[in-house]
Length: 80
Image (cartoon, rainbow, N blue to C red; front, side, top):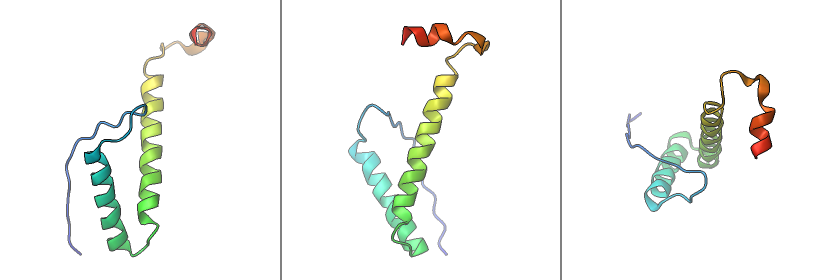
């Protein structure tokens, strides 16, 4: 089996569509996963895992903005 490694930094913003370079990278990784595994669903599974990782990162970043003492979250949600 051939080993390969791609290092690229992506900035995926949830409120903006992916750029051409990010879409191209996703398609390339998906194609390689399909070729390596032989499973035609491997690309879709990768997309789902990537989406979940982005959502978890967004949740962690939101929780990082809250005060350490979370006993009074009512005042925060009152603003929203």
